[in-house]
Amino acid sequence: MLLGDLSLSDRNKIRNICTIDVHSRDVVAKLIAMKVDSSSAFLWQSQLRHRWDTRYKDCFCNICDAQFRYSHEYLGNTLRLVITPLTDRCYITLTQVGTISSTILAICTLPLLLNKTEVLGRGTDNNLLAIV
Picture 1: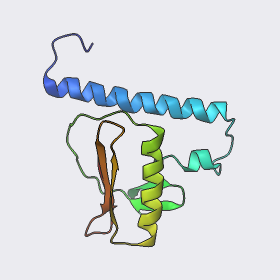
Picture 2 (picture 1 turned 30 degrees about the vertical axis):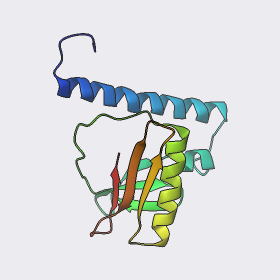
Picture 3 (picture 1 turned 90 degrees about the horizontal axis):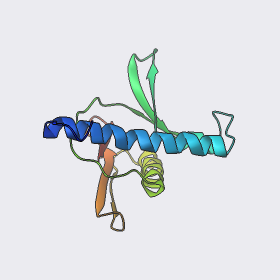
Picture 4 (picture 1 turned 180 degrees about the vertical axis):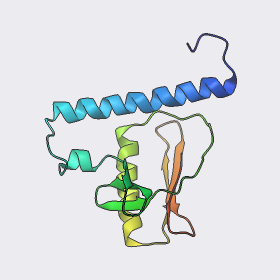
């Protein structure tokens, strides 16, 4: 499919879907290999999860013990680099720091991973922001 005649935008969409899908596959394989059978297991809790809350009629993001209302922001159809275990650890660390202070803005630079930069913080509406 990627070898055919695609617009740049469509090619980027497919690459992004593949990148996220490969990461999801790796996470599921690790959960199976570690025999995780409980939703309270740290390996499951440490994954960024999205859920719909019927009480608030809104989407929430959860990771470890942090919970943020999803802001429904659109970041555009930009290229994404691979998602690594180090990226996952940065998300955990930054969200844990974010639960302590409501004005946190952290920049995590991963120079060993092709100068990949991710910004995680809170907006003026106290919702989680992530720029990848």
